[in-house]
Length: 131
Image (cartoon, rainbow, N blue to C red):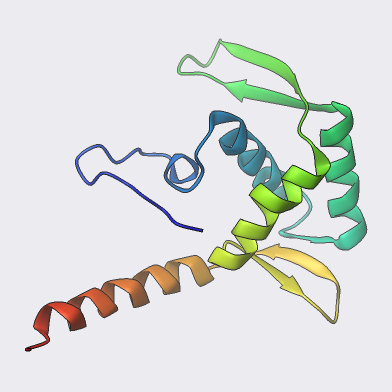
């Protein structure tokens, strides 16, 4: 996955930097919220149930707006296959979510941060390289 961003118009929301559409941003945010509510780790079955509920339009997004009194609810529908292809797989490959093959669980990971630091170091090395 390629992340393109404008340094002068960098959003405050990490999801808006990583994902291209508002729908993807919403689904990714809901997924992370779901994992956090489950103690930071969910099993393969729970992930499948989440994707199925999303596919069937049974997940409800309760978004808090700028005002603490303003809250909206919306029923979300997102294709199960697209969820795995466009949300979960990129989040795993970027290090946002880690999958444990032995325990068969997904958990939120800090590898993304470490990889961003490594990318920054690669750029510093390239800047200092003489030809």
